[in-house]
Image (cartoon, rainbow, N blue to C red; front, side, top):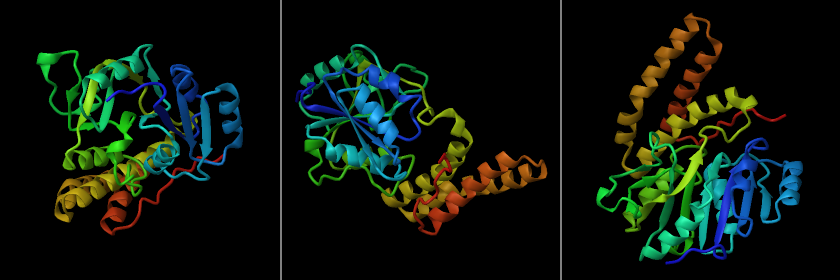
Length: 288
């Protein structure tokens, strides 16, 4: 299998990312098509990107649909066999894509291929690395969603991310589905990306984003375990977090720490809604 500039599209999902995305786009070869899916109706942002970058097409989703759904929009819009999913706070090294192209020629088969995070203290994969082949692609169980390349031809059902997830674990869910179907997930250790982490949304919205993260973290954790294993495992994995959240909510109520109290209330609410089978409805309040 061989990836090239001609059969690769890069998909980036954004929301209030005006101050973050440009370094990402500037690190991408201008000969590669980039599809930005903006989770809003921000026409000004769309016009700015498409004017400044000739290789960028910006799609406005109309509302905040979440990572998985917006990524699916970009994937299905693409006309190429391969799609590289990037977060807007990821910056490619000069030879990142070249190393991916080279490694793809060495592999007989893969469904997901991922570069490696520059900060080795925060690996973007789960699974054992084969140390005998230090610079060769190695197979793993999961890769993080901030940078993952999909071989669309291996998704025969044309189903990619589960759109029930709004935030968190949609990439783990996808990798698990690929593994169970006999697909292969690889990391390319010579293809390096720099991930700023938790910086996809403008910093002025950090409190609202933090509340949303806490709600969806536990909702997604419960849904992931319920969907892929069983209801009992979901309870076992998440109920201790729920009890801890209730206790911390009461503690910070006594301390009159309003923001901390909101965080743990969001965690408790996320668990309760998942337990009741409700959708991942919570959205951060970040409209201007």
